Image 1 (cartoon, rainbow, N blue to C red):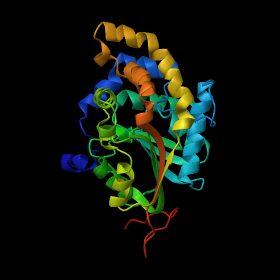
Image 2 (image 1 turned 90 degrees about the vertical axis):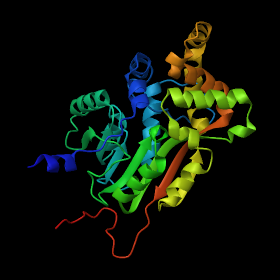
Image 3 (image 1 turned 180 degrees about the horizontal axis):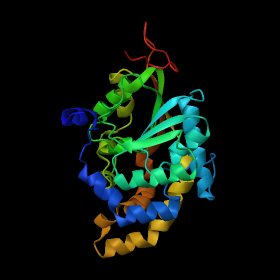
Length: 305
């Protein structure tokens, strides 16, 4: 095979240095491990809950919520767009799905492969280096479902990424996105908008700056998705958000005192994200790729010549 053929098959990766730096930081590596066991998403709690523990149960509950939102039959092939260390993909595989995860962070993939092997799920979960802006390595209509779990906020071109999700989904396919959006910052005090835009910059979340309420669903509809539904589940993540606030409280003021806030974006987000929580929402978004005349239907294998 020629080097040109190799280049054709090699996935394109957006060299997103701020994102790489964020996940390479000791704060991210140690913090995610100690607080969430390596998982990189919020937990889901019943309305009115206060106590955040056990954290692992809440994390799995959020992943169960994702399964409900996808609403796919067991055996469906699903794309995890930003798989991290593989915990979400593993949970879906245990519930009967075939999952292909992609991530742009190498040390995430190393840990994901180790976790998949430890669970004996090598035949149900695969992970590869990949960027959801560039899914050219996947054929059109090759997945029954796709999801993001707090990863789409890192997109540098959310419309292009959404168009790629649309392309790789089969007609009738399901998209689920667990992300954040925000109110119109012009209606807020200056310190609120300054806080959130600074957090977004330091935590490499450029898309979140764009995601004023209504923007994300508008992007999905623009690229062709139908039946776009946005559910505000902010109250269901509040116990964990409050836990982050309490953990960050003392370190935050130490970092402020010594001018170190920019080096600890997770601590800042833990404290200020709770203080200014009314300007943000945690949302579960579902959407469908419409069925079309003569197209391959959900669950059917695409035939190649």
